[in-house]
Length: 118
Ligand SMILES: [Zn+2]
Image 1 (tube, rainbow, N blue to C red):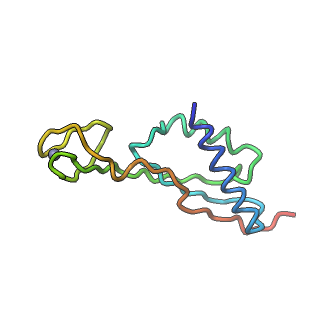
Image 2 (tube, rainbow, N blue to C red; image 1 turned 180 degrees about the vertical axis):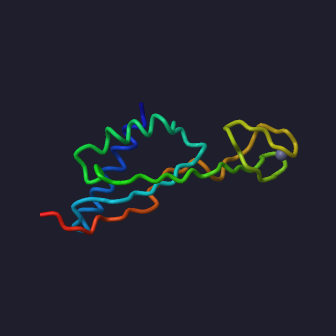
């Protein structure tokens, strides 16, 4: 399950940011996940719950923006929305296209818990 390693990666990055900011905890973390990325939402959800244990993210709220896929046809250069990998071009029916959006996975924002816990 590669989702867990992705989650652990995110946790690591967020912990570094939290440390720099001197934060004890993160209240909200917002992610952009492309619909064409290999992430399975249910598996990601499961991995998230396990991956954030004992981290600064343990009490945080997770927000995910799913980014629609977009591609450009290699034959006729038409740009179109891609629902699934290997969708044919709606103009010419070609299966050869270049994905331009929808494969990303990034941390969009992090909100730091401002209450000081002693
Ligand atoms: Zn085309």
